[in-house]
Image (cartoon, rainbow, N blue to C red):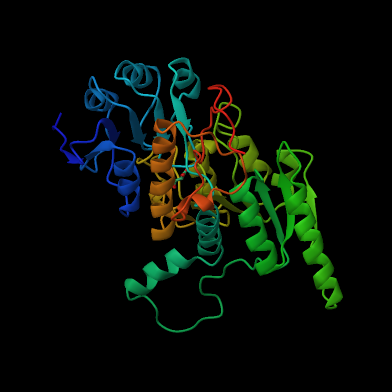
Length: 380
Ligand code: DGY
């Protein structure tokens, strides 16, 4: 195994924090320096294994910022605790790579980075939806190969989305933002499935429907589906936004693909294992009008055999949150999670975390997912 290089910032800092990848911007480093931390950053782009992270934690480590590509579980949290650590932050809003129960057992607070990637990830889902609907990637390849010989009435016919039915599974922050973009932008009717009713989203769409009606246009509709199957049978576009856990793993499988319309568009900018990717390859092969837009994969960074040969699938390398503003915001939130716990701040429980990007942020820890279990006081 090649030895990784770690760059050390503020070597005289009396608390040591490890960061397993270089992060964008430099405000996050200033935050950690300001909290008296020496910061060790791994300069390699390779995905670090548990053994490498364990070695980096060593015998003195107060906190760590890790990546969604790493498995943070019993071994690492126990090592972090033994090294004097009290906090870990994922550099992501999703934390399916983290065993939060193990962290809690070892007295480690677990942070994530919500709020700054909502619109960015929703925009990626919109981009994938249209790339699939209008066959953007296939047509781009066709041009580059010099195959365009003139306009034709039948060339690359795609799918019109205006006034069709949008189905979203998971109406949390990102799902709801995507739904609003598609409903407002393309006047789609919304059908959503979520264990909890999203009253704010429903109310917003009702107000938009009233507005359309006041202009003499047909209003849009919004309804919570009784079941996933009902949504899959009805929608023209299906976009996935639930958390990944045991209950949502392979929620789209061979049987459910069969329920969907033959020419549906399936979008996943959430987590790869929501879809049984082998079943998807098979389904796309036998249903050429079915289209998928994928930003995430079951065994990232690998794809299941055959996926990359399919013209009816658009594939992106997990770029949902990849804008400069968002990635810098994620760095700041992750650093404030670490610094806030080390400075003994209370937990922030309000909705938006955007005030933590400002120069004078609240004296609180932006987002600790096990705050209750860790008995952290709440910021008031
Ligand atoms: C997240 O934060 O969970 C995203 O997947 C990163 O792009």
